[in-house]
Image (tube, rainbow, N blue to C red):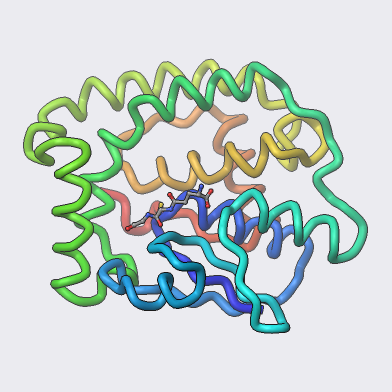
Length: 215
Ligand SMILES: N[C@@H](CCC(=O)N[C@@H](CS)C(=O)NCC(=O)O)C(=O)O
């Protein structure tokens, strides 16, 4: 199977997670961010992730990919129940996270930005939807303070380092990608349970965190 992704994309991380957790081989194909032809050919629109199954058919939508792989390949793994407090935490943080992340993603050394045109495409598209990056960067300190406050709240919700609620569930599929994205931002203070959980999930899912390119 092949998974078409952008490395920075949290939805793509969700799809990658289930392969790593179940130790199922998959070939990752990082598309250039300005490559509209490939995703349109595969699923009729420009969106990642896209799973190409062994029979050549393609499936979009991260959570559909997660459910399909979990149900159809070995015993289901995401059998734990979810905690509404995690959903609420994610809604709050996702409400402001992009404003902090997008200027840094646009400047980082991701494979989807391997050409200047691909980086420019992402930059211009996101500035059009979120506002000027120079303006967003002026508010970074305030957003980092929000993140630090919110991570202290998350610390109290983490039950085990290998599964946020004690048993792997969809909450893990939603939470780890946010923590991986946050690892791109220098200067965040990680409470110990959050750091242990993030690092343990990175190992279990076989997905790198981004600390080495944090800015
Ligand atoms: N509902 C979709 C959302 C996926 C999504 O929004 N992907 C973004 C990348 S993070 C995308 O492909 N956007 C189009 C673009 O970058 O031009 C899913 O869960 O897979």
